[in-house]
Length: 177
Image (tube, rainbow, N blue to C red):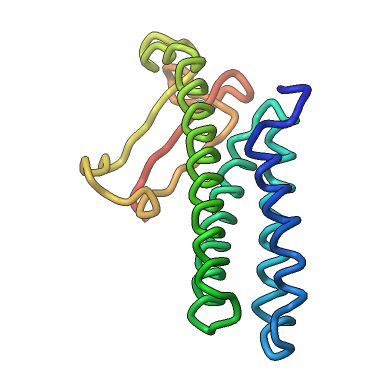
């Protein structure tokens, strides 16, 4: 968690300061549709980056920021194709969005890599852990969709006689839907 904003936050702030007056000059036919979407997406980008700056777990906010950068790219392309902005403004926007996109994407990548390195070692197999039984009916083929399988979790295990022992462990059942 940082105490001061990241450089990309300042760039998003500057972008928003640049785009809002541009949208105010859009023709009326595009100002309240395309223009409003551009302003909203720009503000959302700024807010996601601010959130990511001040959060410990910021991958979600960063992923949303990357999504907003891509949305703004397409909106600006549409504005250029509709001749709402000139080519010079589009070139400036493309460079600014490319820079913000690379910075945000790099930040997200580093956060995800750090999260992978901090993961705890995997637990021992269920055969080595008392109280956990895994029952599988028709195990899934190696490359099948997870949505084709149903998981049943219940807070009991079975003793050696096959009778349930409430709250002494976990039973996990996997079966085909």
